[in-house]
Length: 219
Ligand SMILES: [Zn+2]
Image 1 (cartoon, helix red, strand yellow):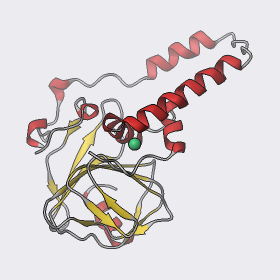
Image 2: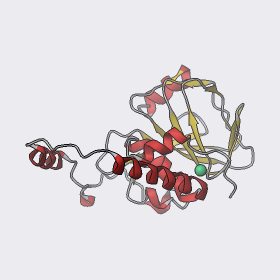
Image 3: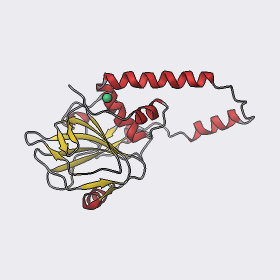
Image 4: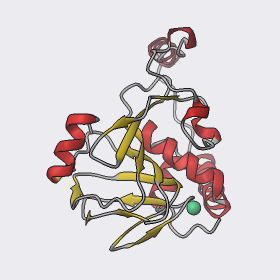
């Protein structure tokens, strides 16, 4: 697998510092599974961050620091109860491809139809129900309408391939699509394409495709 599209250094720094929100962090974690180059860069950022922390003078603790820390623990989301899974959850083996290890603890919704030739399923990260993550599946030859992004979209190709005016994206590639990008992705003609996609925060997709995805997915 040759990987040519990687997360930006800014994104890897945020991942190293634990500052990426849950959805994008999951997509980056999937990329890191298959990309030794980014794993090495991440280790470097983590080491640099650790060294920086060690050079900082110790800060005096607030008198209520322990109580505040315990309070945050109380507010932390409780782990999901697997017995209470909704009936719409698809068994992982029915997704139709081998899922990366980072997705094994997530709940994967059933495939649902969007526009013709285009299906999606919701990915729920335990403890982060609001994270906006989906698997998208486009049939061979599908051309999506022109659309833009009001913030950053993180897209990791899991199988198949797609292209736009900026390049071609193969399994293992991660595409960070910023708000400056308007594009018209097309799936290769010879096989369907499955991608893992997360939107940052309240990002919306612009244009008719955005309105359509909002109506069917809530994106
Ligand atoms: Zn990489």
